[in-house]
Length: 124
Image (tube, rainbow, N blue to C red; front, side, top):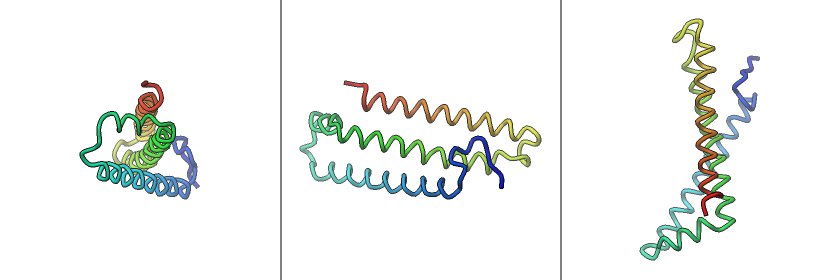
């Protein structure tokens, strides 16, 4: 069995499960927000939207959504980099190229996640 230092979960089943659970959560979130927008129609004002997004339950839900996006994206990006940054493409430098690429992507995901969390919780 081959394990990679950049695969956080070390299990294909847990990666698969993370992808499915996060996809369902994101779909439910999108449908719920879409329903809210459709139901409020032209009555949706900035004040109503700010009140919705400023409520603690919605901040918690948005935090879960950010975590789901980050987890979902990481599993997808890890899969793509391990599938395409190979020896056939890069020769003996493939491991280094893959590690650098995955590190850059992980740092970007972390930065975007922290930025999103700052917008959810820090902006008043």
